[in-house]
Image (cartoon, rainbow, N blue to C red):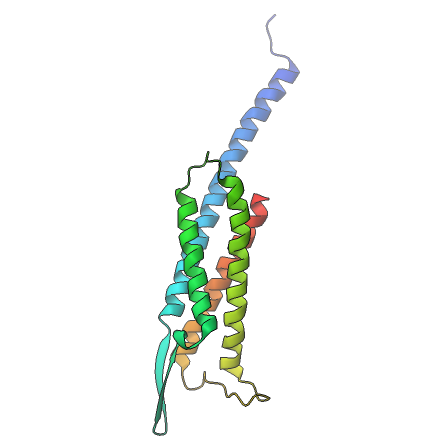
Length: 171
């Protein structure tokens, strides 16, 4: 009688299960990277196009993202991470660079987190002002600018969270 042993059946089952799990892991990683790429690009574009001109009495002033180094840092960081995400998506799955990608993912997560934090601090001051320093809130005069920066920050936070999930999933 040539029936397979119980051990041989388990080995076959384990190999098939491992192959399916590897495929599922690849799909999840790919989807997370696509979401991160989209979020980074959208955050950079929305913040990069944020500007509005307001007139108070006879004074005219313009609010632009480029007026704040923190907002510039946010745009640059999201652009860099977006380009990195695109390059990683083009990397073959069997490449030996995937161990380096884990380290670079950690660096990109930190870059996104720091740029979000810096831009959020400036956005908070723009919305609420700082009475101790004598800074008045500007969002009551430039609604569109503040709404656009808020939207960019929300999408930037999504990008940072997705990169954190990617990092945790890769570990």
